[in-house]
Image 1 (cartoon, rainbow, N blue to C red):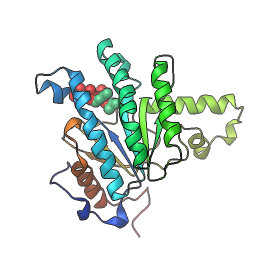
Image 2 (spheres, protein in one colour):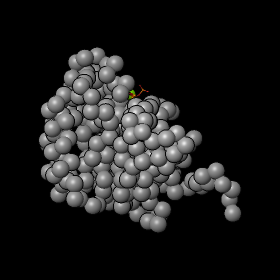
Image 3 (cartoon, rainbow, N blue to C red):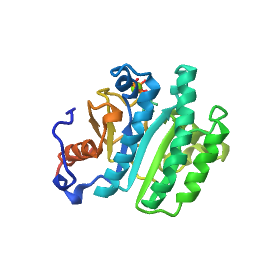
Length: 246
Ligand code: IPE
Ligand code: IPE
Ligand code: MG
């Protein structure tokens, strides 16, 4: 696994090999804040700029799907004050940014469980943002919120069982059909920031053949150049999908 190195520009990339779907584990907010003597929550706030720049970068090079991991099903374990902050932060982020995202042609969608723990006000903001942007075509921005890859598979299995589908009809196609967004292609490229080398329950089903790029950059420092570096790295990979090279 290679780490991302030098700064890249959009013009360095091969336009015929831009990944259609890029997914990011936005990690390192807490460490970014701690290294400045700030509370962890300041790191989450600083991550907003990185989100906006990553979206603009994706738009610039023609990425069609961008999925961002914003809150995991395990993040409820965090101190109650941080969880409360993250709930409010994501709600106000949608309020602040949805119009500009809409103007840029971004379709905002959500992936995750809508269980009792997610405050109703956030669900309302999510629904409003999704409704406002539903006809946009340039980029699908999926916010993975209260998302877990295992929970997604469990939810798919539950629906399959509830629909009374017989066991012999259950195959990979059927499971995929019951994921949160069966119409989204699998991510071609998964980026994780902050120098951690793990998936942390992100897109487990969908990332089977994704190319993984790990960046040492802490999420609040992430900018479109880092996205381009990761895409440049992706463009050097040879994808085989279990086959042999012809
Ligand atoms: C990622 O940053 C944001 C969320 C998980 C919500 P972290 O908060 O995990 O930051 P570190 O990993 O503690 O530095
Ligand atoms: C993954 O990061 C979740 C999000 C980025 C939302 P974590 O910081 O929660 O992952 P671990 O705990 O380091 O594996
Ligand atoms: Mg983390």
